Length: 282
Image (cartoon, rainbow, N blue to C red; front, side):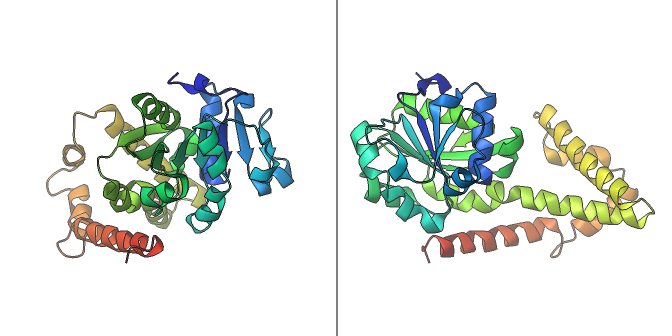
């Protein structure tokens, strides 16, 4: 099966880690029809708090799971710093059940997972982002040679439940794009901050200014999304009257050497360098 019905109480999806991103993905799957009894969470914080979604089993540690459990898939959704230790707890289970493994950790490459689980284990690396929490995420996927077409389709279904997804051809593309699609929402939030600050200076209350900023960004994004045949540059030009208010502002924002077209590549390069440092590739 290549939809969420591939998971069942007998062959569940194990979600190792259910923080912000893991929780966003889980909520998306449940909205899309995943049966609560077809997923098992392993998360000590959630287990202690008793805050798992209704009907979803949650355990504090992998050692609490039944030794005969045969998952159809294991998703590793923990921080990169603890990934090796967490993954070690699932190696025997994955090898025994033949389950595929999906990871959403930044900076941990497939070579590491193949070293832990073995190169014959189907492995998918995913870079999602936080708008997945509202079903509007953007995820990048990369798979190793052991992933079958059906498993790749299932992985795509899982990520499509929380937004759009793209398969990349080279793993290096995920590392290069961590600072683009992964971190991208932060840049948009900064833009909202800046628009709100400018709006407040005109006399709007702080709440009115925040509303104006959010709606401006949301409306522009929705317009671009609903007219994909028109590129962003053309949409920008349609708002910009020569010699007008928008043009004057854009002359500052696009100024050679100090405007966004020059600052953005510089920012992305710094982000890529930091990702390489965190993943031990420097």
